[in-house]
Amino acid sequence: MKKIAEFILKNPKKVIDMPIALLARNSNVSEASISRFCKKLNLTGFHQLKIELARIQDNENIKVNKNTSLNELIKNISKIKTTELIAATDNLDIDNLQSIIKIITNVKLTHFVASGNTIPVAKDASYRFNQLGITSVVFDDWQVQTAFTLNMQKEDLLIVISKSGESKSLIKLINIAKEKNSYHFNN
Image (tube, rainbow, N blue to C red; front, side, top):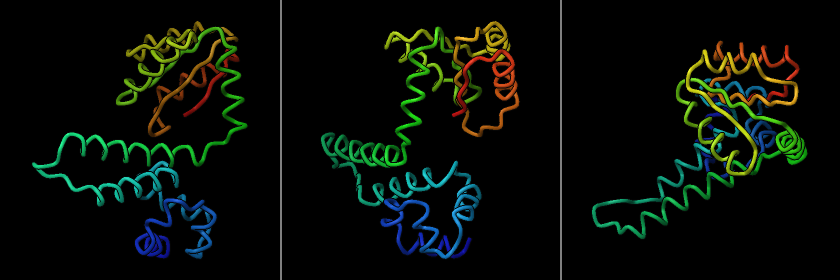
């Protein structure tokens, strides 16, 4: 862990653009050690570490005071979001993404489920899917989510949104969908 931290602290700008294998090689550790390091920092993985490093880097470059114009603030926000988008898209598996898009566009109904702080994300996703003509639903209440999941058909899709991936109620819904042979993705 110490080797990883030392390398990152000495080279934060370089790490933002590195694949995990290169960081492992430069730190003289395994890729699994880097994943464990990220988990110890309460990050979901190496990708999130890179996003956080980019955010810190951008925040260091942004100086805001009472004389900062609205135009400068908007440019700063745009710069931060652009960096986040680049970091997010660098690790996309295009083949996997195409498979997921094919499934999403061919299902009868998409049911988004979430709990706690991820419910607004599920609501937003459902709204956007419906705007695209992909019929979807989302419910705040866990009991309603469960009842709806129990009534899903084989051609329906369950999309679970979870920050931790460990919510027992959401895992139960995944198991229900598996038993019904509905499509499901874990995110």
